[in-house]
Length: 249
Image (cartoon, rainbow, N blue to C red; front, side, top):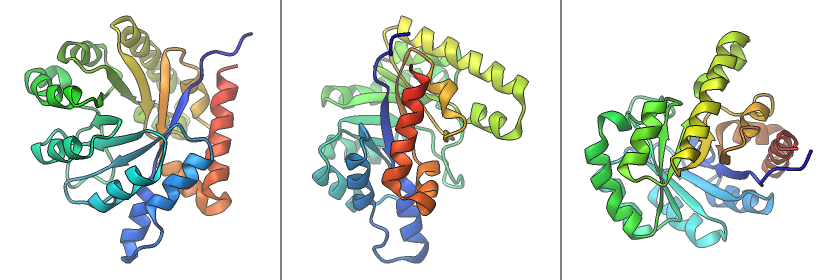
């Protein structure tokens, strides 16, 4: 069987900053992680600048954008403050995600279908500035259709429920969620969207997701930063790249 198109791998370095911030000071340095990821073959670097700056800080965004030669993807909430920052820095991509201060990580996807008028107006200046705007959504066909309506060129499917079912050993729920992901990826491509996926992926569960033919990019962070404690960041990224390639054979 012929190998399908290259599946891009974006590395989220947020939790390197989480480790730094747990103690204060400057170590470990997220910029160093970004350079290691680039050296290991990552196709892009993802950073989530949160309202409370709990991990990545503004200075980290400045440093990473200056240091790396691969695309930078800025994850952010759809607020005026974050749009101002994005327009000033002009990253290659902007991924809009829901954000609540009390959550440890991004929970669920954007309700695009319930906020389409505001989101359409919100993303227009970003697109005009040249950013590839992505909407982080649950695998729900109504949300995919809404993303297309508001003019977002990219969607990122939230695969967190699939990852949880894999961890629980709930095969029936896992398979049902995987079917939803396949269907939404196919619909997204049919509607002219570029389709990405992320959240909760690891060496064990990435294969079935990477095998979804319409997917163009996976964004992975927390697991790889954790795995780096044992094998190093470059080795962890290379193994993830290997697993993704195997799924595309």
